[in-house]
Length: 274
Image 1: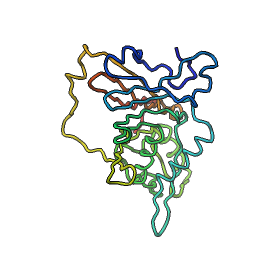
Image 2: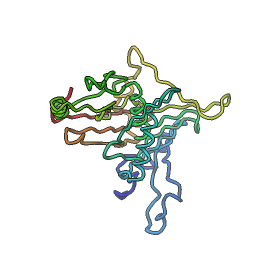
Image 3: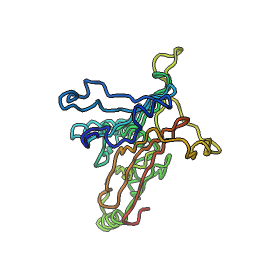
Image 4: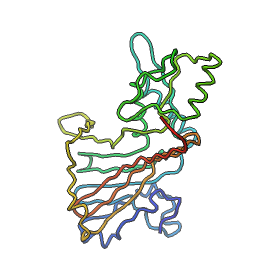
């Protein structure tokens, strides 16, 4: 059994012997990342599974350090800032209280030919980028000019409205006040890139909306096929200033003929939010 401190702990995966019968193999963490391997007799940590030219890896993470959070905050501010010839519209964004900076899920096809990746940083950068279209609030009304972009919107709790009414009563105005989406409702659905011999480096792909689902439900719900690997990775969470809870997680289930990825944004509010 892997220890709790190991980022690969709690992944459900079949033994190497059973995986082999489905032409699948475990992927082990490089020895230089397992400093204690050999010292205590522990086996190398398993990073994931390889099957049909797919290398699927996942790992959990400790809570980010202060320096990592500071770095992320700067990256989020840069992603949300609009630069033009006349002025720079700087927007200060705070990351969630708890970010699992090194947690990840990656799916690599043909050794880098096609890559899916899921990380907290990627999810939050896409959330921050949406704020370019959520402009500063109108000084006269103190209301956001743009209410929604790709599901990212400015939500206000009852407490916020109470403070606004007090400020209005005292005739207090905050110049160019910017309210950000403190529910961290990211539009991120995974990052995909393609490495091609005709291009230099990786090319980022763009997701397109489909008229209907393309999931083969018969294959996905076939109970005769075993689950070769399952993992549930938490990317970030926040208590929204004691107004509720929000969590972003990604789950993966690998079967012999297919795999299924579920990204879940859980949001619960303890008070009314508009």
